[in-house]
Length: 424
Image (tube, rainbow, N blue to C red):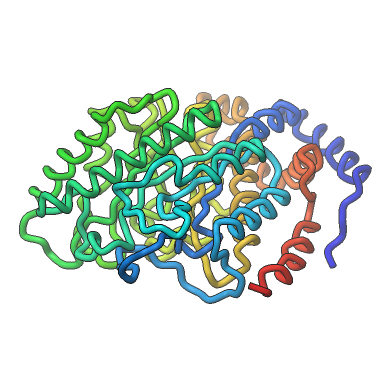
């Protein structure tokens, strides 16, 4: 079993770390206060392998989403998923949100197609969120449906198919608006479609023109922006759309710059060697707000569990250095069915928060002073020394203040919870 750190030990280590950072001009108390008010939106689909709870007349169709692995105990009902999420919440410090897809509707055993979904089908989720004091975010679901089988939805050449998906998306915006009203805070609704081709489409123009028309109709619907904040998400390629994705980075960047929705940057939706941290300052130079899907892509859009690697550190360094935390919506997006799912949630969220904290603890003013003076060696030396500063001691204090397990003790809870899910 992993040891529980005593309150006295955490406080003593924090006091020492506070002095180390203060010597560099960094206020650790201020960093912890900022981290505490920075919400992270956990994604429901890690808990059940992107299955959802739809009642179908036909078998679930394909559509571009894959969670690999067969670890036992995936949630198979909404109540199980909520219970699992609560367990994860208990092991994570800070301010949390919960991110739902449309396929997680509860329809009392009735078949309700996606263009007919209403806020009432998410009433249990809203009541649950209110009980826990958290906020919800939302996503339309453009995959795993018979009308998504050929790989096109909002850009489909068939008018009736396209209209179905437009109705679905408008219905989702209304659901998000209801969620926002219920929680007294805007619900972020993210619009991502898997539309694309496996190999060399001749006409790359018409689907994009149709997508613009569909999006314009969706965002023209009378939805209160106070309670529903929209984002559009780009992608480079995926399974079944290796050659052509209608909603590419360039497409959605241009759309976001000329229309109301913000852009969503997913860390796994670019080339495996392309990182997104350099895009942050470009986007927020022209946009007021940004949505992030924090993930870890390996080889292709594989959405691995987030860890505290260089990509995460660089991402949040750019956000913090630009004073952009308040205008950046941070959500997680990974799904690994090969490991303990509660552990995946907790590892990924805590790693994301550690990345934010590391950036908040950076002696940015001194680094900029070195840079402006042309002292490249001084800047590089300080950046290297920062890597071994006592981040862990400050993090443990954050956990202690939040009532979450500090250090490795949370792993015991994760392992014990396996006995619960193993009975499913």
